[in-house]
Image 1: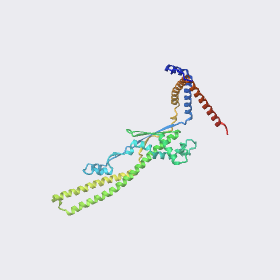
Image 2: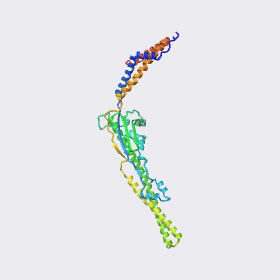
Image 3: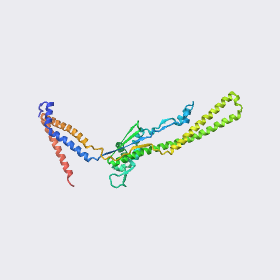
Image 4: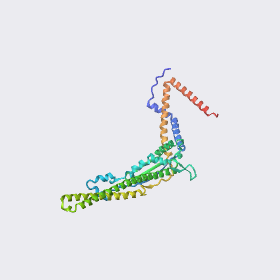
Length: 359
């Protein structure tokens, strides 16, 4: 049968047909809201704990002896080679801690740390995050990799460069676990940076120890050279050439002596830094278990579902109106489509009944 030449519906006709099907639109919107509300009760809650700390603003100050040396001609390169110039330690900047708390090394340590198991009532029970996250795999390395990826999604770190304040937010299924993870991450950040500082202090002390020994040997050689000069030239005040040589020898001894004293002071400071137990971070707020969950927010989800359901309901009613108009213009094709839909629905229903029968 040939298609009838029914004109396409106008906007007014489409709007009127959609309004007539308002019951269908309301049903669709109600269904969306009901599904969303049910999901808020089915999905596990998520709690957010927050911890914050400030970093120690450490600057490598130049000692007074070396500060005087830098002003002397020819010695500015020595202090730069020794790494003793005044500058801020990059490992104490807030940005460093942001990268550290998101690094794979620290997240691996965090995933392998043991926490009280909130799913049990026994206080002595503890488990690592691989178990608490419910990761089921026989490959230990793969399980650890999945735990690290989940921590990357659950941890958010922000830093304020003006106040050196670092804020750490952790989301977890249990409020106590979220607080424990945040506090443990803060402890690991301080311990990791302290290990690095100790390693640098030890390497710096070893380097300065060798430089002090070499500088002392150079100083003794310069003093021996000066002594020999005085022994061989007892009337050096009478000769202009010997006067210049004596000044050169004395200046060499003074320069080497100043460098030796500065290195000696730096060596003593490095020994103190190596055994320094001062915390590199100061905790401002320890994370505490939150009383209310962060997600799901039933009010927000309900409002969003209502808006989305209304849009979907109107769209469904408009599509039904368009399909009805198309069926009027193409009755044969519409009949074939309805028959195919009915046959498919019957086959699906039969397959579901077969699967539901007891064996």
